[in-house]
Length: 424
Image (cartoon, rainbow, N blue to C red; front, top):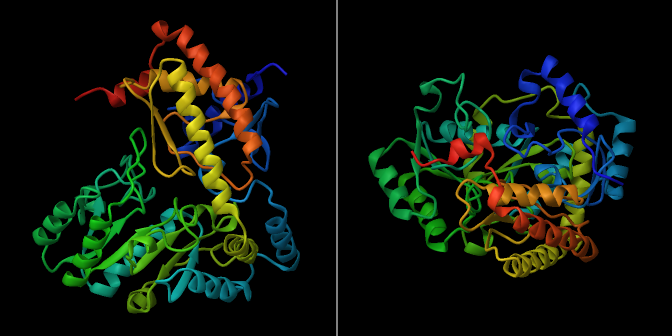
């Protein structure tokens, strides 16, 4: 089948008339190559089909929610069974208690759980609970870290006020000295420190946490009476079957979870230690669909497979094979890749590519050959990505490298991206 995007372009034109800018948030394709599909028709396992019928091996996993595979049958069966009984009802079902018990049993620092819908809900609830617990104002956050799209943290602050983030103070990730300096500058007024399990910014290399930094964050919070908040929304259960910082010997007071905890069903969670229970009990947070039973049933089943299955080993093995193959291909075609972050959540950028023209051209060529990669955001692998899928993907990426090499001298940068990345 010849690749085409006629139906996608038609839908984009229709969308511009009834949706601001045609799309919004991370689902907007304004920063993607022009050929990239905006609309999709179905997904199964590790595969995705756009509205034009083009099939892709998908390495974005819906920007993270797909952990076991799109349409993973055991999870869908559990969700369907609960849906037949009731979903959003006048009160929650038994599933909310079972799900809370399950998460408390899986995550070492957790003594309680609260549920919401999106990662932004969970991170925002975490900072509100920290302020209620400590009766302080300041939240220390890493420069450039993404914690959601609320006014206090959105990366594009149009429409927000300076007051919305007046009490957010920034430090440098993996820099314990900068974190200590932030505490000293706001002595007695720091409610909490929020950090991601590893640094996963867009357009940049990823960075794993240094043990010394994570340990210092815990010690500083203890010394100053602040709460340590781990934003697990993106990385949670992709790095470990419990807290991502357990291997570092660091337990947060609060942690925000989302994306993959129900394998695509809409739910997120705030977990906390018993020492942070008072703040959680003091705040008022709610939502019309936060207590819906169907995604809770899906989450319970997903968590069972996280505990009992081999998803983690499979995603790591597939990610490593992909990384090794890409490195060999790039070298053979005269390119150098920077592959950073965990193998199952890779970031792939080109050396000597300041405006990303090589990266954009390469992912476009791969996309037209049936492999959906991202030019500037970290990617994700799921349990459904078998080694056979990796072999098929590598055949396509090899051809993509060859195609980019042929027209390397005539490539043009993406105009908006080039403007964003230009030295100031």
